[in-house]
Length: 56
Image 1 (spheres, rainbow, N blue to C red):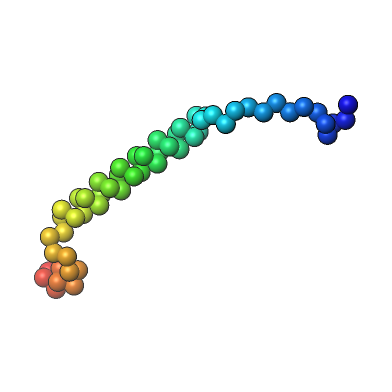
Image 2: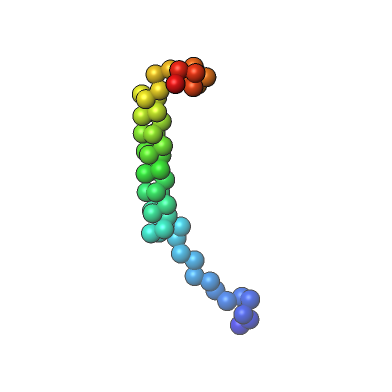
């Protein structure tokens, strides 16, 4: 039997540890970005940045 015709065992495309960690990190990142955006919207009362600078 030739080396090019050797049977290759293929595993299923299941989720491994690294894919799970990547998904968890992505969820944490999205939660953090949304929390920072909401805090920023609460903090900035004035929507005009030039008025904020001139008011200092």
